[in-house]
Image: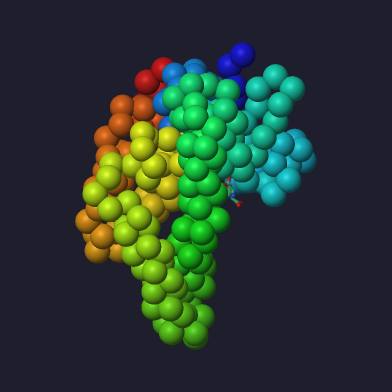
Length: 217
Ligand code: GTB
């Protein structure tokens, strides 16, 4: 059965791969699962029909027969559990890969999101100037710790896994800030993720939504 995901009709990032449908597209491309995309406007996301799929009125969602999922991490985990290629067969290695997925969304992503909120939604508040460096420090703490763990290895725990997919997906949000460049091994890690053919196909397809180019298929 071909799953359907939802994505922004007009992504605020102009298709630079920062919206969270990118992670889901990437996972589907890694496992060679064809999929369909339903584009939704900001207003349609808040309508009852979309809220029935996503209680918080957001993208991405994932529909496959009777199954409807939301939360990019849960969707990627679902894809990884049902297809070979994104989780190791060994039970302990599999548990560790899933741990990295949680670490990406639960430990590394929160301060990054705080920075986005502070910059773009609260930038005009009087306390914003003082708050931004505090948040940047919290991000740097996490990057330093992650950089130390990654060391000179290609991926976080052996072969590329859904844990790396989620971590690279989270770190991508920092590229424009220049902060990643302070940790050359993390910067190279993200580049390795972006160099994967599945990433490139997913990126091209979500960019095509914005530019109007035909999808790669
Ligand atoms: N925890 C959820 C998940 O991981 O799936 C978070 C989902 C989420 O934040 N969805 C956002 C959304 O639907 C899109 S990805 N927002 C609309 C709304 O809440 O009304 C977040 C996002 C948006 C825009 C950019 N950008 O333009 O750079 C990047 C990321």
